Image 1 (tube, rainbow, N blue to C red):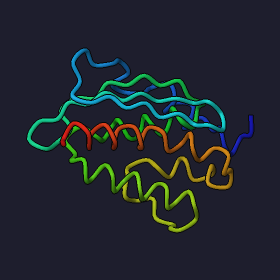
Image 2 (image 1 turned 90 degrees about the vertical axis):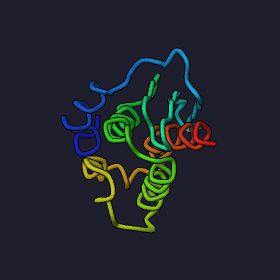
Image 3 (image 1 turned 120 degrees about the vertical axis):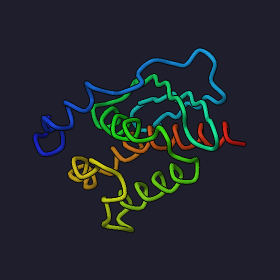
Image 4 (image 1 turned 30 degrees about the horizontal axis):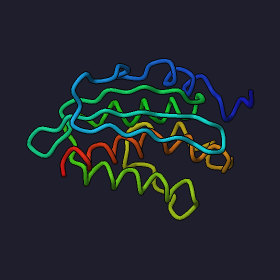
Length: 140
């Protein structure tokens, strides 16, 4: 393992994904997969009053994908589909080098070393993409 990329904070997050159980009756379910490494995140969502009320996750990803999903899931309850889509887009812009901002989502600074590893970006985006898309579908 490369120490700057897989540090103890990332490994701690990877081991503590909240909502790590699929919902039995979701309004929407989305699976996202990284073609580069095969990492996969499935997100189930239930909305109430235009905001995420429940999330269920199945995460089969590398430590970076797990850590990123843990960060997203820890804050997503109570957010609107638009807010989640904005966070997804801002993460993608950061990873692509189009922005240097990480303060839009709590804890993302721990993933900053991965920006230099484009092959890991798809896995890092999975949780943000799956939850945001499931929220949009459930809200529609």
